[in-house]
Length: 192
Image (cartoon, rainbow, N blue to C red; front, side, top):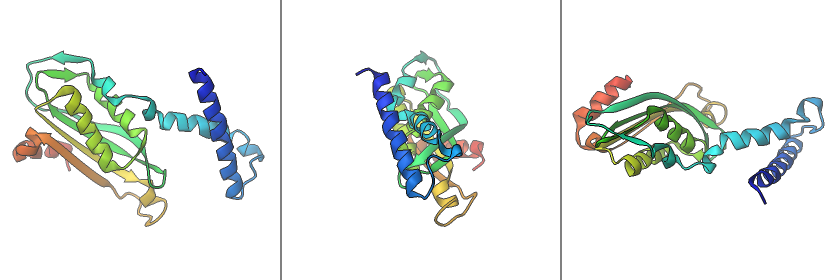
């Protein structure tokens, strides 16, 4: 079976499940506005969960040798993910700082790696750590720090219903862990 055959079969299964959900919530799956909804939802699921088909580390494989040992900060990387507890979105900004150990990577590659990890069912804390671990394994920097600020729809549209509330997670390794002044300088650049 070719990948397109697998994807086609997966789409049909997803479409049927969406039809089932529509019926279970009391909708008429044959209503004009809903006729193509199962197809659109199946297509959307392949897009928003595409991180399962990607190796995040692969985006960091092309490196460049440099004699730069000061922090590099990639700030305000937009990301969208889904909470594994309710399967509703959480989204926000990811900030990645690292101190090169002779190797740097194209800045867009960090953003692509963040997307690959975010486009899976996640919890923010694990996402933060997965970003750090991926960078550590591939680049071996002298220090890494990741800060994520996110709004969780499971807190804003359901449950406690507190729109605008943000969750901030932070993790650091190497020089960012041992040098508090270095860590504070990155935090001040983020205006947190």
